[in-house]
Image (cartoon, rainbow, N blue to C red):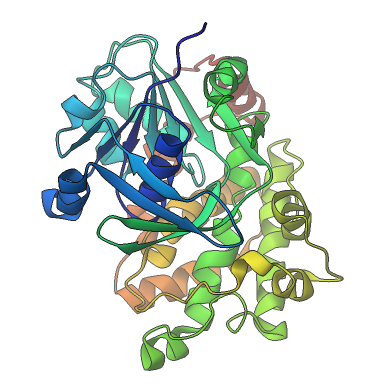
Length: 370
């Protein structure tokens, strides 16, 4: 009988709690890490997380093997490290993990946003990590979930299919095989350019938050984000951003899904246009808007999603005025320079690569040093 995969979940927020509890309920050994001890105090005391779901989904008490604020402890004797944090924390976590990873482990970013695995690999390399590990990223997070108490998580919906890719792509099958018993929902994502440029958070999150800025500030987010916040007009803006993203993807040889195609794949919903499809997605019902503009939908998704898409666009000659406009508005709202703080191509180490060289790097792991 084959040994069950042992998991570490990095991050005890909305997603990390849901994933840790669900994996534990499935019978896997799960350790949970959060850098702030107070955030996991109740989970540690109880020894696990209570999981609730809508519509008869997974529920019950997920007993955890270990709950800790030590990064070294949480990754000890585990096979797969699930990073469930805002992608703005990926570089920091990579630096922390660089000294304690072991040969044969896999690190999966949930999700990578855009170029997450590339950034993670570069940080490990810069920090001198010599462990033979596999870095992979999911295209989006498999759950629509929320934390509803110190040791309580709720799953609204589990996506039907989530593409995943390793860096290089030749290792993707190994990762899928490793997590297959826990997650049949993950499918081959081709490579990390495909997963990164099929990043729907880049389209749905920042623009929708910024276009609803007044309502968020005046109501503290007391409205349904995707149902009330998506109107025919805001949906048209999202469609423009989506077209730009698909065009950037085409410039690097990726046939990206449109937002409409993604909604059909992930949720099996239909609609004549993006507005109708979003309104028809029952999993979005009940999800409240952010209660503040100081939210990851801006401070994560702008620098870690929109900035690298715009950087690729500039490098390979694509006009993305809509994406640039949303990024500029985010800079104004937060009084910060997301262009400088974001995943620029020089930070990723790919600024000098041609399309062909970039493709060979993500597919085969061949690096081009100049």
